[in-house]
Image (tube, rainbow, N blue to C red; front, side, top):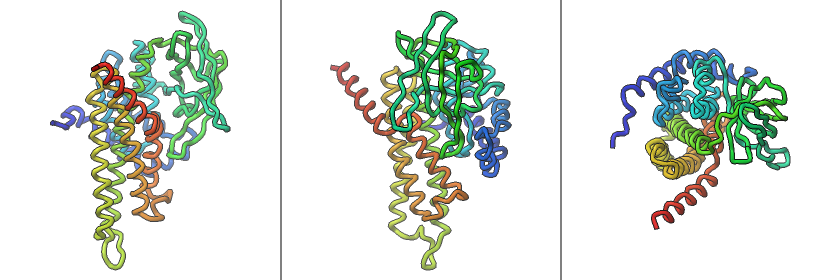
Length: 367
């Protein structure tokens, strides 16, 4: 089987890799983490100018890509470079703008003139209680939303938010401007870098994008592909950094990589990473083969990257020893990001349960 990404996608990868190496090196990342926004807005504008954001969406929506593999290669480079920014939020919000045919709003997002984010999960209180699903009331072009959403990526920097809310006829997606009446924002930094926030809506004016829950499911599925590819890339970076450390760190006068026990552990890590990479490729390859197959392979990928990601992060830190936890070492940042990626689109337990459920449904249909 041919696993090459093709000449056009390789050019995209090379362009993004060079740009991140030039504009988002480690010093730039540290400066971005200390900024109020949590990411470098000039870097983001430069990516938009290069057309990187356009690779996430189809030509009819003003982009030039939009396939699962286009999404995958972009997020793979994001994983390797580890820049902060509303990458996943832009993809999820943009996919719903694309589904709604709102090329004007999406065009501004692709051009970097507007920052978009996506609010889907209800807010969680300090006591662990989950807020009710946001609700929408209205009809036609006149809607209002009420409710609370939690951990909304880069909410403090967003101009627009795509919000999911219950309409009475199922879940719908709505466009809300962050500066509108009835919109309250509380932002905060995240442990892996970047920022998020809590969104509170009190009869906030909104525009209906789609009342089709299938469109929301498809957008979330694209987020699963992106997360799986990013996680696999982060794992590869952690593997390479750990191998380099094992070659250079000496004990008893020899590199610790000569110790057979560590060699066996690294062999296990390498094999598991290949499994995670294969699962991410499968998620992309099966994306357009029907919702059931798409979601089943997506759940398998997220379960795998969650399980393997935890192993890779733990082994990388343990083999580095105490230095592996220090802020100054990039490895600790990659490990934190990998841990977060195991949860942003649902954790491994959730996806394992979903995989089993989808498999049972497929068996029942075949019977």
